[in-house]
Image 1 (spheres, protein in one colour):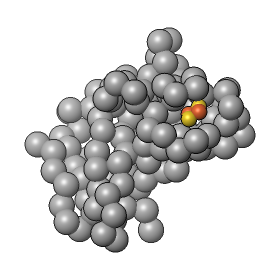
Image 2 (cartoon, helix red, strand yellow):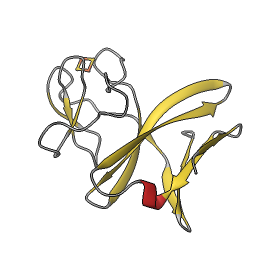
Image 3 (cartoon, protein in one colour):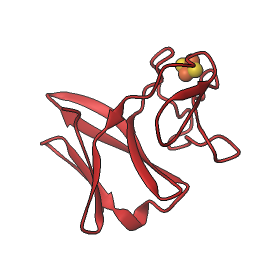
Length: 118
Ligand code: FES
């Protein structure tokens, strides 16, 4: 079950995000909608705001399509920037040296919980 609470919290069952998968999410943060996504990269779970640091577009032209073909990096569909799925660093493309903005994510029992940034 996935839900967004008015408090700015999104959660899903951890089993819904096996390695190599991503899920999109939306938070309500201080009255504003924040679109993000969670990624399980080889067992390491991270959450990022879905906004490319180059021009500010969402990374996924096709919803929830974040991985590059080789499955080793995340890719921005607009101009092809590549991001490290664990650090969020832009490792190639027009925003090299910049990074995705993280969202806090934690495991609680069998769930993954993403919250608004502090
Ligand atoms: S908007 Fe993402 S690479 Fe240009």
